[in-house]
Length: 466
Ligand code: NAD
Ligand code: UGA
Image (cartoon, rainbow, N blue to C red; front, side, top):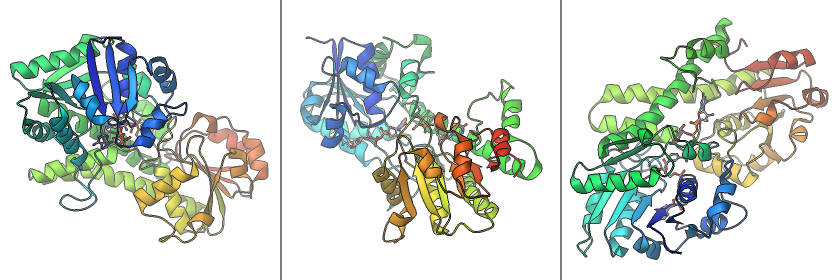
């Protein structure tokens, strides 16, 4: 079959995979190939068990795979074939060197640009899909310009706003698509080309075009604003717990003001995920780089409040359990950073587990989507907790596939991810099997406090009087 256009996406992760699958589904005349250095990842995309869990993703992939959607490790030949190359690789916070702990590492983006410059034989549009520091497009453009074949590349910024757990819906019905490009005829033509791809399913009124730098920076600002709302309501949750006000009532009361709006006012044990912290740190570093220390400190406070929220939760748990968790069995319900995903990156649950392990509690963790191996990777990667730093790690953490078994004989339950199934558990049955007093610590406000108290539980929930 012949296609009108060919797209190659470098990076088959949480963004590259779903985004390209939705493009393929909505554009049957476009050939889409997602490439990655990681052969295991590509094998999984080509198998019945996709590498990521995302509602609706499997159906979309299976409807297009092998027709106009392909997954491959043949990076160079797929780039050569493409008219448009998306860069959708990871851009983690630097762990060492200049800007360590703050700056985003864009080495993967630079590497992609170098590969494109090396293997391209025709002019191409190169699209930054990864979240990057403002002015990264300049670096990409300069690397591409070093190709020795006199080829022309247009660089566009097209940040992704999907949220995990709702990725397919977000991609099918995006609130907006943002495309930034150079204010030159070539830049504008490249923008028009990418607009025409999205226009296959996104109304043109929802496609926003800007200059490159506004587009790059808007992505960081969007995440900073969202995370700021969570930290703001979490700061109020602490005040509620001390005063008798109820944070859910406050969210409703203030969210009804259309100038504030209801979303992202759900108080929690803390935000997690691969991007909020990373992108705010990236913004903080940019502010510092330009000598804007007050601006840097303003945004840094969003992260400090999140750290406070995570440690505050564990401290309160321990204090309620008579100031000791040593040897106690605690059922941890949820390890993913939010419901409907198996992603554990920066999950608040890992921080709470770490702090409880330091108290020598015995943790029985249940999460419908997260396997033990993934939990251990998260401890090691984000928290540097491994069998060297915590010799009892293997003994302190038991992973359960049955939520009732996780709760059997426990002194306390901590709800750390808002999976819907935690609302409908047979809490009478759970209560009967637990040590008494039986505590429930709800870090997500999912349980029905009144019903649980009637059963006999001692219930403490974020932002409710403790
Ligand atoms: P990810 O870690 O899930 O996937 C990135 C993939 O890129 C990996 O599979 C890796 O092997 C591959 N890769 C790295 N270097 C490569 C190279 N040179 N050539 C080919 N493949 C390469 O990351 P992700 O969550 O998909 O995020 C990607 C980017 O999108 C990041 O900048 C992130 O900030 C941004 N973003 C993520 C989300 C999200 O929900 N996860 C949402 C919006 C934006
Ligand atoms: C977030 C943004 O919502 C996306 O627009 C963005 O594209 C993405 O980051 C990214 O750049 O990676 P994501 O991290 O997948 O998406 O999930 P969110 O729904 O934003 O939740 C982030 C964290 O905040 C979760 O831990 C969630 O539980 C927490 N949260 C969210 C709250 O605690 N309260 C809320 O009211 C909302």
